[in-house]
Image (cartoon, rainbow, N blue to C red; front, top):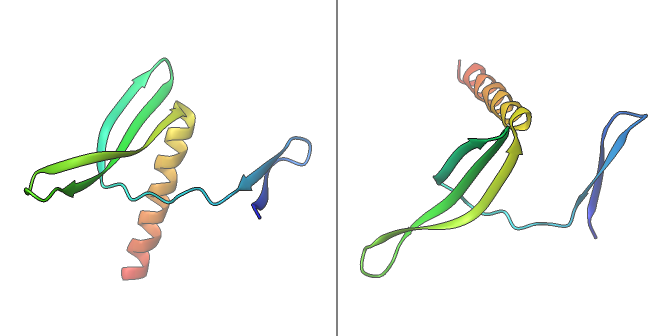
Length: 88
């Protein structure tokens, strides 16, 4: 059963459905491009095959409005500041 949430405003609600999409692990950026106000980010997972050859498998490609990408950056900055305060 999907998890349902709500965002937005009372006059313009946004209903959020989470049907348990996979949670891929990414540790490598393959693409970071801005084109016409859209930020494209490609993320991959690094691994080695049996011969020791490193490879990067694409796990997700994001296409974000520039404003959304900046919101993500601000959120990461807030998380970093919270963690820094906890360590002090």
